[in-house]
Image 1 (cartoon, rainbow over the protein chains, first blue to last red):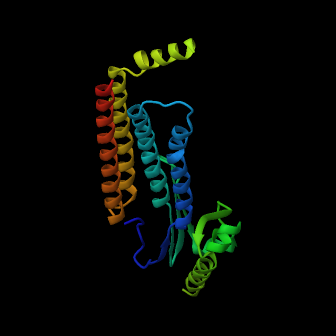
Image 2: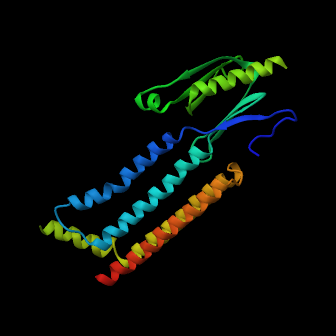
Image 3: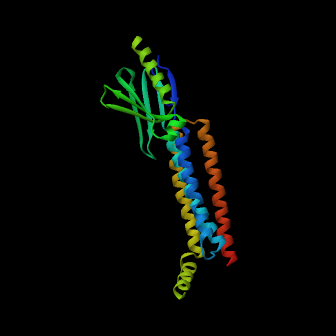
Length: 163
Length: 82
């Protein structure tokens, strides 16, 4: 279980960053993967094929590991909304993990931001939650359909206030 | 031209010799094992044994085994071809 829930606490949803954010990084890695091949075919002289293959495989292994570090970073980031609180889990590379919890009654204002052409077309963006707590601003990055998420948080807040 | 030949021989004789390449291979294996332990630690501790994590582990190690196998084969092939 990711969270230790109170007896009457229920998870409304848990969301990861939008898959496109991961895809963009994978595309970058793919470009880096073909870079040595471009270099090889553009060389004015010939180098030993086996030797090139050795260097290319070492390069591929490096990118393979980087790919899984990026994926780990993506997969372990999580935004959880329960009927009592908002939890933002942020994995920042390896050995750096931040878990922020915000009680629903501390929420003052929710702002969404969709920045750029791709984010607008694919409908993902950031959510900023203004709080009355110690941490003034709570930021959840790269969430799909931020308007819907904002609405879900607002409804959860309404339900919480009714209790 | 002389400088190029000197550099070429220097690289092939001293830098890319059999011992050095196999040493690099072993070093890569060690580094890979260390990084894998770190990744598995994160996956097990924070991934909560999900199916996705299990699938990722299989893909990660399968890919790495394939790359290491071709690499070992290529190193062997390279020195046989000289």
